[in-house]
Amino acid sequence: MSLITLRKILNITNTGIGFTSVSRFQNLLYSNKINHFYNNCHGGYKYYSNSTPIKYSSPDFSMSKLSNGIRVATKNMGSDNKSNFITFGLFVDSGVTKEDTGKNGVAHFLEHLMFKGTYKRSKKEIESEIENLGAHLNAYTSREQTVYQIRCFVNDVPKCMDILSDIIKNSKLCKKSIENEREVIIREMEEVYKSEEEGIFDELHSEFYKNNPLGNTILGPKENIISINRRDLINYIRSNYIPNNMVILAIGNIDHEYFKGIANHYFNDINGNDDKNDSSTKIHCSEKIPVIIQKRGKHDGKLHIVMGYNGCSLKSIDLPKLMLLKIILGEYTLNEHKNNDIYNSSSNNKITQGIISDIKKYIESFEVFNTCYKDTG
Image 1 (cartoon, rainbow, N blue to C red):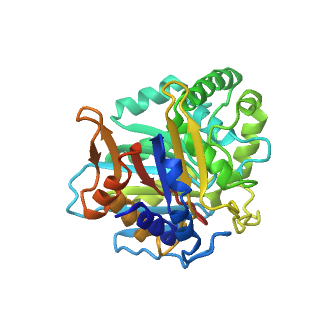
Image 2: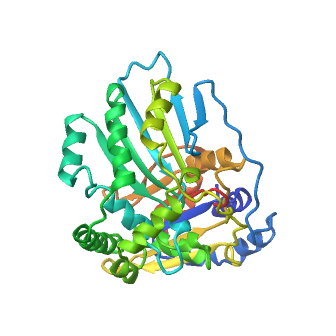
Image 3: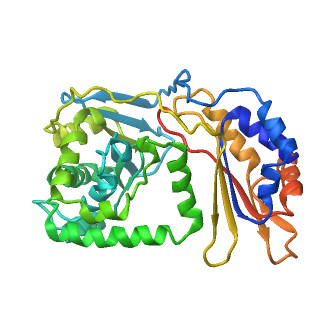
């Protein structure tokens, strides 16, 4: 497949494409032949459209609500699943997009502090209890949600739910922990931006979603990390860690009513202002499509390029097609041990081999990516 055909596929299906370590690829991007083809492709891309949501159903999936509005969902793996382990967690519909203006980074900062001790357990006691149960506790922050998850034995779900609820409801957020984590997050940010591969995708978001919270980084700018205080963290909890923003989900061999009863025991006392209006609006992307970011490596001098096209949302009926296309197009890396002429490829079909033959003279690695959100992508 020629590069022109690749450009056509990406345009029609609304996806993204990433190029790494490029030397002469810009010339291909702006060739008259490709630009003529791009301008004649079908589709308008000034705004994201709200596609008809995909409806998933499964006889093993159950969902209900606690009296305070928290949703509880289970995916029972069935009698064929002999594992005694279960994964469950609290999904909070709140990430970077729910941060107040000037407080970008507070969601991630808060997630760090949730493991540093509660009024009932010290940091060491939390770690010890989880370790003694043979369980694993983890968390992450994204642009649209914060997730706290535990993997444990089925019989230990009540004990682990107790620990999780204690972390969510009773974290101390003490000054010493805040200052310690401030330094940790600053070092994390510095490490991230040492890598052109990491930093360039944040730049793509920033350019693609100008004047929209989706364009903000998860870590936040350094000046925000330095200035975030306990009051900011508490305000964020009060505004966002509320029942209508919460889902407690379990996947494993567990009965829904049993799991719901445990969740109810530990989380039914959470209250909050759930009368807030839904602030979701039509998201505007960059007027210029594709968005192209170029960045020169500080150490090796190589050029990194990433191109972003309009994608589809998590609700879109086109999402499975987009995911399949990503797999078909694959990713390719130059094998320097074979005369710089052989690519390691994640896909060996005719499409990918055609792409490789077209671009291997110019680049060291190539990958296709897609990032989907609730109302855009």
